Length: 244
Figure 1 (cartoon, rainbow, N blue to C red):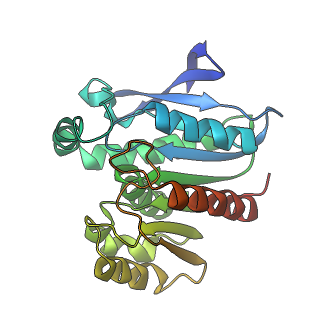
Figure 2: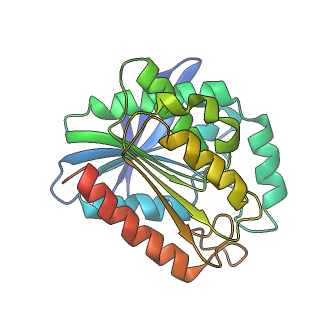
């Protein structure tokens, strides 16, 4: 994983993967050392919102890696909100999921190998990335390199990944809105049952009035109270499971 150029506190790296090199942003905490977190993007790409969450994690004390999972599609960034949603959905439809999971495992292993990483390494993902991180956790576990923690915000692919639940053995935190039209509460209960069947260290948090992608700042999705509550809970949970 070699650096190419630093920009505004970030360093752009490349991770060797099947078929080429995965671009990824590396963000360091003020101390320069800390536990690691691989942040998995939303359906819109590595947007300013995703970068801002990565920056918040770095400020908290983590070494953060943000892979650009759409690199095989030209690494596009789509406008968040209703106007960009059709294009984002089309991109997700063209995305090679299996290759993306393999990229996620490679990113986890690459971050672990960094000299700046001092401590455990976890995964965190939003929506599209929440499901991708869950699948990468299962694949990494199967390969003998399980992550130490997983945070999934309303993982959109989770309903189709429940057969992998017994392979996600690390502690995990899951956020869902009670008014999520994309993942209804009956489905959330199915996800919770599958994920907790063989793992006692799992937390599910639900937020009244919040719909899908409630942490995204776009007015179409954003729910201020749920976003704030979920991020406070995420920080506290991470500091417990990935102490800095």
